[in-house]
Length: 160
Image 1 (cartoon, rainbow, N blue to C red):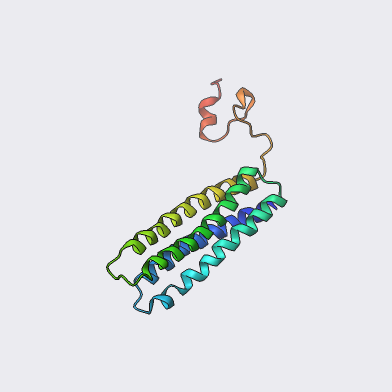
Image 2 (cartoon, one colour; image 1 turned 30 degrees about the horizontal axis):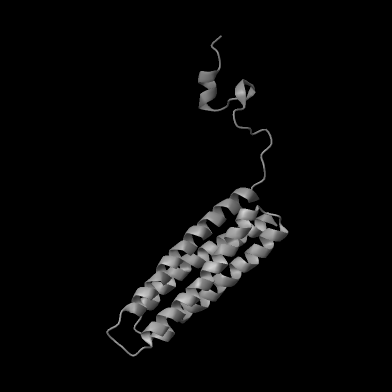
């Protein structure tokens, strides 16, 4: 189950990176606004649903509580993205074309996207570390009883 969670975390990272790409391609597209951002909006739903699934998988796998919470945090931040868009559109619907309040609020969409990226990176790193099996015989500070091999073995062996 931990490997499944780690795989989902890796998939989430790919989706977040693709989301930034789709935002940039939509911003520079010559197509109408709604049409150019459609792929970005669709992937946004996936970025909301994927961490919800990850939270459930992490809970079933009995992952650390902090990791479960961070997976849920990504879903929460993704929901905030939709709220930011709605508030920004509300400011733009006032009819005043000279207002930049909507643009200022919409700028928070990118900042929140960076927060999603940061939390997703942390989740992916921790998930990867927890999915690796413990290596027997590998201890921190193994002492003098550890065998030395390779180029260091020649210098570590006493001369006869």
